[in-house]
Image (tube, rainbow, N blue to C red):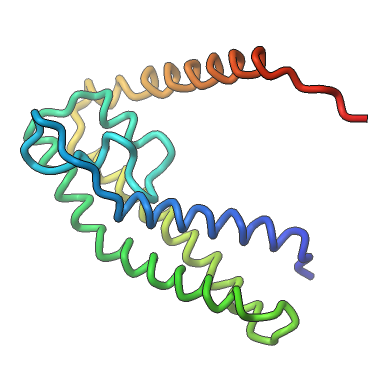
Length: 171
């Protein structure tokens, strides 16, 4: 039997990820002066993509042709992301007004889980397509180093933050 204490955090996480993906997919930034084709979708990550996709693509210094290919891939998935966003939005509205005792509540939870899984899968498929059809072998070989350096920077930053913000032991 599904326990409410497991469902609520999962629901919150799925809702937060849906919102973040929707925001990332719709947020528009002004284009840098040196970039004529509009905002670079890989500078700050791509909504729904696996964690490091935006950082990795930015650090690989893609050529103009590769940037065009990546933009085309992102544009091709936009319709699917929009449909997932609309489904998640409607489902969140329904969840907000449906009591957990309602017989249809479980179906709404399943829809929320399906939307989250579909968004994650779409992000991974996008990354695979970029990896296999856009990146060179040399760029593919650079990825583990880029990811490791980013992880080390995060850990260093977290260590510095913890040093400045000591935690008091809870009693």
